[in-house]
Image 1 (cartoon, rainbow, N blue to C red):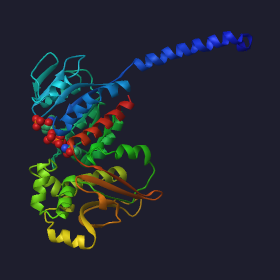
Image 2 (tube, protein in one colour):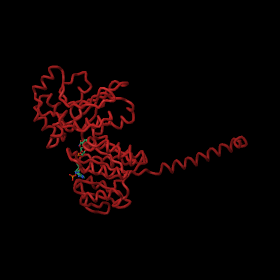
Image 3 (cartoon, rainbow, N blue to C red):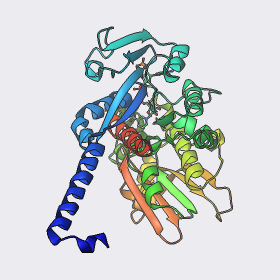
Image 4 (spheres, rainbow, N blue to C red):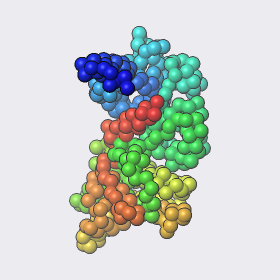
Length: 382
Ligand SMILES: NC(=O)c1ccc[n+]([C@@H]2O[C@H](COP(=O)([O-])OP(=O)(O)OC[C@H]3O[C@@H](n4cnc5c(N)ncnc54)[C@H](OP(=O)(O)O)[C@@H]3O)[C@@H](O)[C@H]2O)c1
């Protein structure tokens, strides 16, 4: 009614001034940066790469109106704390010295569990929103330091993103429930296929699918060794090459003995098929016994040998079964072309038939990217 009484010019002015007000509100909202306050636990290959990503993506983060504030970093020996209102001086941590001395920006303290929990509870720093965790996967431990930390953090409502397989393979149901109860997030993109998008992509676009089979080449070290053996190298020479390139550790047993693949298969089964499986060591199968004769036998049939993890069930109500084995893979199989340190997973489900995801299965940068994308997804919920 009122509008009809106004002249065209006055109406335009009102609309324009409304636009101006809206514009200044938007500008204000845009200028309010979202701060993500993190504690980084584990400063090795993956943790170090994560810090480098934070540095290299600083302006990109600013464009997204995000600011990542590292309030504390933790290694086996040191806890580095930022002063109140400050952030840890990350550049200093990237220097060859790795651990800075106490200085104006950083306070370096010897590691102790009590101090870690005090920091987390806000006693020694500002409140932490997210723990970014990249410590070694410890097998067969009743309560590893990482598991203890996750339980503590989630119960405090602090979100966890991790690259560490064991706590997720062995305690997913418990940690997921704890996260839900305390309105925290638990994300673990880098635990399988390293940082190649898998869980995050599935959560965005694979909802409602009922998978009856998932099969994968889940260990980059084994795949690298088998790829070199196809070219004629003996197992020991191929392993040595993998170690020189940093794909295999000096003690490679977790990779070549199959336990890394088994943990990943359990994570896949529990996440994608809502199972509650535990890693069963009787299923272990490694590649140590593979000989040139076996490789040649497969080649004669136009096949390649791969360490394949398979998760299968007859119906959506069935608990899935995991198997791990060295299989001859023919040229028409999607996993045939997954070579070197790459990993691949093939999902089978009605409606989509098969979906294959391939990507780099190891490497600090790839795994750190998984942590980075997890962190951004958690921050979206703030
Ligand atoms: N590397 C990859 O390509 C890759 C890919 C995907 C997933 N992952 C997973 O990512 C995690 C980290 O791997 P990484 O290669 O980075 O290992 P890493 O190079 O051995 O680094 C491990 C880091 O954790 C620290 N640490 C060990 N125990 C700790 C504790 N109790 N509390 C706090 N910090 C502790 C170590 O401290 P110090 O420096 O003092 O020794 C080190 O900084 C593992 O679970 C691995 O399975 C790795």
